[in-house]
Structure formats: C-alpha cells, structure tokens
Length: 305
Image (tube, rainbow, N blue to C red; front, side, top):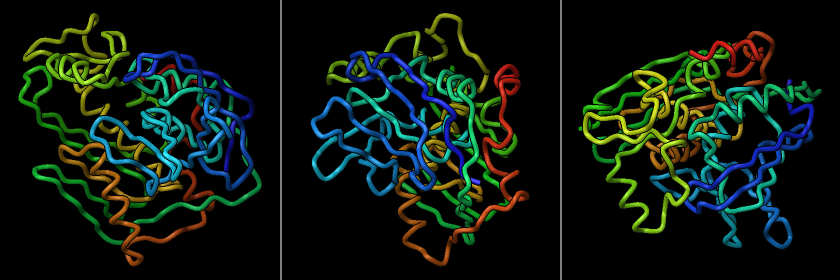
C-alpha cells in the first residue's frame, strides 16, 4: 500500500547557500501524488515534482527546476528522510529557493516525520526492480545499479585529507537501517572549500553547526564526528535521496565510487533510457517488507547508531 503523513509537519531553518530563513511544511497528499514541492513565495504557487528528469545538474546539491525557471535546491536530505521513513505521497510547501540545511543531516526531518506518523492508503504501491546492470562514470567516479531483492547501497570515497581518507560502507536499507545508521550523518567539506564557495556567493548559511569541516587531519567542527565514518555515511544518505527522484521505491543495488549528485542523476537517466534494465512490480507484503521505511518507529530513532 502507498502511504502519506497523518498530519502536517513544519520545519524552520536557514538555507545553506542563501543564508536566509526558510519555512517548510509537509502536507498529507492523495494516493499517486508522489513527492511534490511547491514554492509558496512565488506568484501562482508553482509546483515542482521530485523527478530525476527535472533535476538541474549541480555538484553541490540536488536542485529541481521547471520550464518557467522556478527552482528549489538542496532537496536531497528531505528526500532521503521521506524514502527512509517510507513516505510515498506528500505536498511540500517551501517559502524560499532552497530547503533549510538544519544540522546538515536528515535527522530532524526524520524526527518530524516519525512524530507525525505515516498512514496507509488504499492504492497499491509499485517499486522499480532493476533487471540488469547499468553503469555511468565521470573521470574516476562511477555509479552503478545492479539487480537485488532489496535496496542496497555500497559506497566508497577517497579524499586526500587524512581526517576523511578512504572510507567504504555497505547497507541493506530495509527495516529502518537508514534511520538507525545514516540519518544523523552530516554533510562535510574542507575549510578551503568553504572559503571558495563564500567568495562565489555560496554557503552563506554554512556554519560549524550544520557541517563537518575538515582541514588536513583536523576536524574543525566542535564536538568532532558523530561516527568515525560519518563522511561515507552522509554520501549514502545523499544517494538515497537522489535515488528517490526515480519516482518510486527501488529494488536494486547502488554502487558508488566517488559519486555525487550529478552522477547519480546521470545514472537514473541511463537506467530509464534502457527499458530492458528495469520494470515496475506491484508490492505484496513480502516485497514491501524489504523496502526502506517499513515499520520505522521512534524506537529506531532512539537507537541511532
């Protein structure tokens, strides 16, 4: 069965790049609505469905745009929370050009969604089943989808900074794994990157409170890391959010090596250009039990690893 929220959920925070205050309200939505953003600060209240075809390529975040030039940026953490909590239909009102960064992770979104509760709808749920391998690359970075009976994410990163270095993690995303293992992992960057972005009018809302900032072998963010491998966990969080722009839950294995937002979008475009590489399957109880978010509760949030 498809799901939506039981009640409205509101979040308030600062946009990472604009530095401006942003208010986001998640509303329950009818079956088959999907994930839809709406800019309440723009005349006509334009809507932007969270669909990979409408993603504007960016190395820094996932940004949606429509034919009128209206955009909404930094959707990936909220998308990951919706996927990880098993929410299929929601209307998201945003009164600015980007979703607030909050603490740089998805944990606040997850807490709000779980607190509001999720309700089943009468419409059947379809998932995207990967039938054959699809791979894309960009220099040394690669992203691949291959067949699997559940959504699995295998991610590897490699940075020169000793504070990050080489990290790899693999997770089966079923049974609340996202909530327990990934949702509190924050975005990360080099201190030199912050300086460069601000010089170009970006990251104006970035602080030590909403990102892990590193400089060589030093963690500059007060309190240090939440996980020794927080960086790769955050990349997996981003990947889950970007994968959810496919428009439905996925049954397949995502393998990323130095991959980012733009490469994951390129992978989805390559997948759907290959009708032989995927198919829709209607989820019975057995299939649904293998999807991210099924059965997630506050206990999973309390048990964040």
